Image (tube, rainbow, N blue to C red; front, side, top):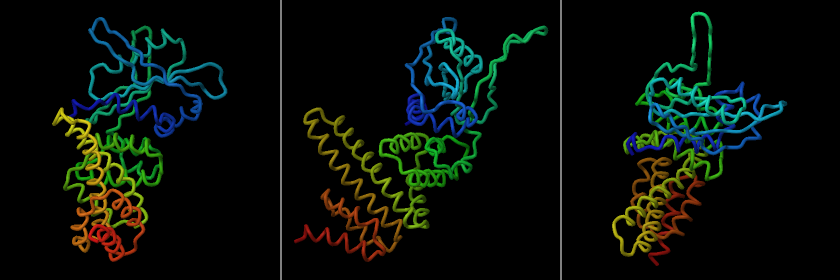
Length: 336
């Protein structure tokens, strides 16, 4: 997927609507302490038309909430910005003005700069005369590329985990960033839907190539067994889902006739291959080159139930011999 094909607005909208409180607590703690984060409602997108520029713009995230101990409602407007835009600070003021004109409420504006360039973006817009300061409009800004990813890896904040992929890291640190992301997810123990959302966001912006994936699994092999087990169980579902979707999509596009049969067949095949891949990667991670011989036998396990039984038992084995015994036990069911 190229940069132009990524729907940045949708990705940030899903992330911040799912973890709005966590986002505010992480990056704007002073505001978070004053806002009642238990009382939030996401409003429909506002559409502004700029006649002079000939453009239409949708306000991405608009939250209705209130301040603790104070009457009345306020709005929080969050504007993710994925590319450099001239006079963006002026646009933030225009959005603020339109929103205030319609809602007549206090509005807290927030800009999130997510592009891959380090810049000094302004956080204000002024209209000043020598004899009078007419306007000094200010907004919160978050420039992700300026953040040091290492400062967030010990957090149990899901937004921090997802946004590691947009923070400032060197190309040679990509594997380490992915590893720390996985460790954060393993600690947080989120429900599958939220975990999948974070994984989809992260891998959109930081997807390892094959060589980097191999390096990642070598690093996992040096870690504590319990932590590795937790990480491997998380990644099992991602491998399965990704392969199933890819095969199903390919079959659906490849032939119009028998599309339903192709989809069903592709889903099953994808799940089998995903489980086989996870078993092999786990063996390589835990036992290294010594497991090569038994890894060669894994593709012979093509029964879904057998693969599930192996996965259920594999994460608790204490030795390569135990792992080999489990796989041979399942293989023997079909040899007999």
